[in-house]
Image (cartoon, rainbow, N blue to C red; front, top):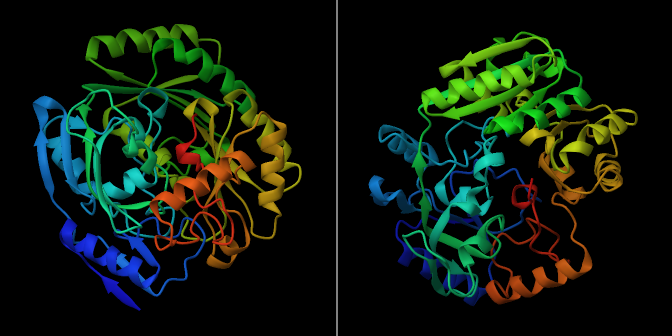
Length: 416
């Protein structure tokens, strides 16, 4: 096996041109923090972008940042924090869940997997904040899309097309994101002791106070968050962010609105941030094991019904984010989870299920990403043929190479 480690976009281009000429597949890799997501790859060569690093433009006053695709996300977030700014979409760190080190994700990987976190309710995902890219297609052709300013895009917005493509269409070399000021104040209001159905109703009520995040941790999950500081009772969490007086006013409005829902607890500052980091990174299921973990996006009003029906037929732990529209599920390999889970999702309003953690043999045997209906599969095949006709970029990661559905709608790419 050969590992290519380009440090410039020109070296990336020459490597892919060689691979295309030789029809030799490549595994596209940053620091490998998300390597365990998707079907296992069988490639002879690896394109390692971990040395393609560096912030190339940062203008805080213009709210724009550009960097090489292999730049560590942790490094960029530190720079932003020093200037009172952030990625508003709050990108998840998959490292802990997949048994790796935290902070190893790259900026290119953020877009390729279309990451988002609990603030998705308000801010959207990575695709909603990308301004421009430079990339190399599987044809060995360099191209650019977008730019370094917030503007309407003329023609095809290829930057957004890369979101959720998991390195199967092109190799990103440079990315430009919009950044935003970080909140001055953060407060989380926790309603204690609610069952799943009551929690969903409470989260819906709370949205009138402009909450930026809403999650529910059932009783057996709560103690696994924030080093157990929340205790063991179920916690329905509503986060309020912004200027100090606004946060005080909206938190009080929430208290009045939810006064009859259950016991209320207010959590502020670093304690609040720790809770939402753990929810973002699925820490309750980051137990060092390789048991299957699923990420399900579906209508918030139906998700708890689906979970209840699932528990009648399989052993499953669950907690909810995105006001109930995102369900994290921990299951067992001996359960027929893919067929059962996706059948229940269809029954209860539809949605998307992605297997984000499992052993290599388990991932090889199941459709990891949500299977596409025929018309979308045909469209995906045409897009793949335009960008990577010889299937040299992460072949088979999203679907078997014999299948036409080589580009899929992942949970990260689905609307909440």
